[in-house]
Image 1: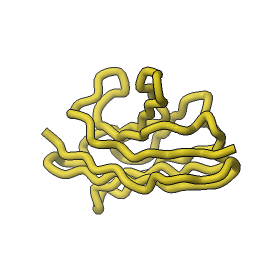
Image 2: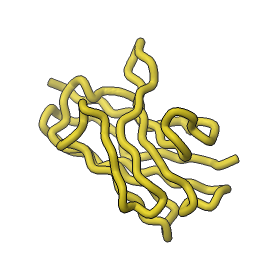
Image 3: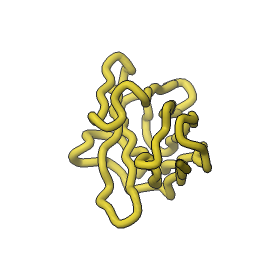
Image 4: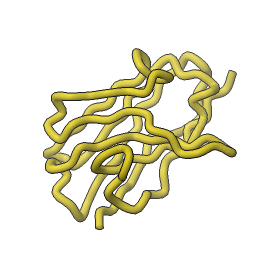
Length: 118
């Protein structure tokens, strides 16, 4: 079982930027495709962005395409999500996980809270 630690969230004004990080321990990070998810108050957790194990392939939900960038540093066992042009609708707790987005491989971490004020 992997241990996931997300960080980098905070309070930001609309139009601002944040970079989230996710450090993975307990598993061979470089062997896994990775994804970011988010859960807004009263809503289901949803997929945000994914990246292949090599970092060569990335994919995004329509709601964040063009504004968010997912990346990874396998040597540091760290996944990133650079978020720009933030909107109040991006307010949520953000989580990372490995494997396919449809069937995440590990137990969820504590997440990191992002609040975007209008």
